[in-house]
Length: 288
Ligand SMILES: Nc1ncnc2c1ncn2[C@@H]1O[C@H](COP(=O)(O)OP(=O)(O)OP(=O)(O)O)[C@@H](O)[C@H]1O
Image 1: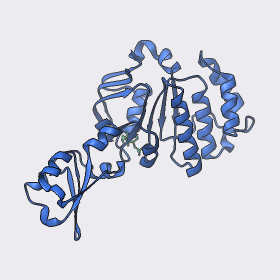
Image 2 (image 1 turned 90 degrees about the horizontal axis):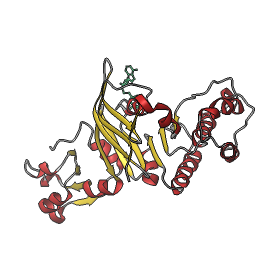
Image 3 (image 1 turned 90 degrees about the vertical axis):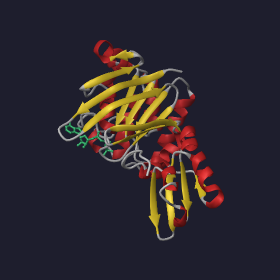
Image 4 (image 1 turned 120 degrees about the vertical axis):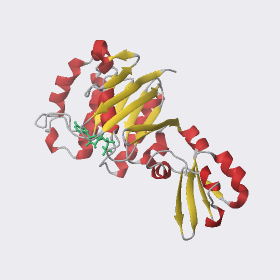
């Protein structure tokens, strides 16, 4: 399996913020969740993937092609959804379909009406009368109706109620069953990712900290709990970050084997949640 997205040494400088030297590969046939705190640079990176923003340096390739020569071919193969209404607000869904459909060779009217029915979307009401969830569903219906191989979404579940969020995740899972599809989406709701993601890409301060499979994350990171008396200058080196409290310490390690060697059975070793990993990696990976 190849990579459907390849960013090589991609840099974008704003006045007060930079996305720095990103090397990111998105694997074909998998779901990758894109996480990182507010302002980490996720949307900026996604915009560069979509050619909505030009990098100052580096290379962006989708399906092995670059945007300079192959913009139309690339866009044909992507379904893009982001938080916010991309459509003209006064128009209804029928009008929007009429405008968008001719842009895609593989547009599928039957599929579009299938999603409209599944999402219970009105065809003749102005988009501005849609709720946030309905707008997201409308974006999705459009994005999914041209048989896109790659679905890129910027915070698709933001502001959605838990029921529709779950329905959306189920739908994404169904789409993956059809095979040969790739989904890349950013989110702050890391529990959504436990449900469907195969890979997690984590950005912090404009840098990509890691892009690892869920399996590798579980192998590489652990949450360790123990008494304060176990910590000294040497044993602390096993941890990426330590949180101390009156009842003991809790720390993240990226070297489980070493922790087992050092502490044996005197500590509790647990699988960290994505939130734990994000919290403890705040400030980057550097050993204590
Ligand atoms: N066009 C721009 N001009 C100047 N600064 C910008 C521009 N676009 C984004 N930024 C800055 O870049 C930083 C990263 O923004 P970005 O939207 O990529 O982060 P994010 O990880 O998607 O955040 P969030 O999770 O809050 O959506 C922010 O500090 C933002 O103010």
